[in-house]
Length: 469
Image (cartoon, rainbow, N blue to C red; front, side, top):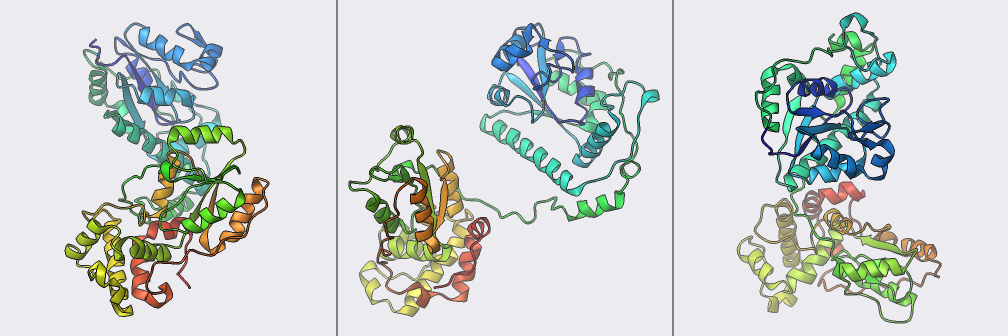
């Protein structure tokens, strides 16, 4: 055998044919699959509590010891891994390019029905059709939805890890495990010489009948599956780049264990004023990830929070604060020349009438629709990125304990102060806007429709309704 790999893992789930695949691979000289080696309840196979000299207790204490034993064993050794096996093992094998990945899948409806039959009959393996136990089961739509969601989540986790690690896997479907040519290709992928000579004869398919004869309420199952959005048609596409956690923008109270995670173009100044009024002394800011971790460790019982603003109000604030007044001069020039926003020179902004301001803001709203879909050359600034994307960025470091809303800010901040045992100070008045016209004067149905399309993720994720003054 060549040594492209030191070990292998078969990612599978219950009732996907993993026992049969394992039996076939174990018939190839130099390959050994040790079953569900990291099943929390046994080692490899039921009623087994040691494997390659590692006991169940030792594995619980140090799962890496069993991985090391597999790498050191003669030939190429591997195991089957399901989503509910020891999670400490998953990252180690996914990050290791010397560990070959085999991904076994099956039609989720078939695996679900097979699982229900096995649970009902108690028969999990079949070596001879004479001993087959048959049963009809009821399809539970809610239970199947959860079954499907779990499968998809685990598959997406595997896919992303392989993409990030620049690795590939050998994919095998349930129907492939009785195809000698495919199994021989798998053996060659693993580095075995000669391939598979024949299928394992110790196990046979347990329930070869069509689904209609195995499911008692087959009609109800068909109706339930027809309602599933198989192609995820209702998904809101997301082409925004991933954002960092923006730790340097975080602000802590002088002494109270409160940490504010600001979202640009939100009521940041107003919240900073409230935070400052909690204690006498300067706010703590300009954090690095290291200094923020030190602050978190030094303030047990701390609470972190952020504040959402309605997408319409936030877009107008971003437009007025950063584009209209020329703060982002280079971006402003690109918007004016390339994307034809009707923006006058900065010196003449003060002379814009309401119609001119409305036309410029409508142009910005129209630009945002394509911009947030990744269709423009302009960087997506934090001032107008979706709030969902900003929160995902925060989550790379820490999730806020509270996501407050601007329209009920006094109540939300009052609850926060109470949580850390402080009397809640009065909420300062909103900081005066730089906008030359009030948003209520500027708004039209067209502008709101454009912004609703641009910020569909925020409307859906946070339940925003129509904007009102």
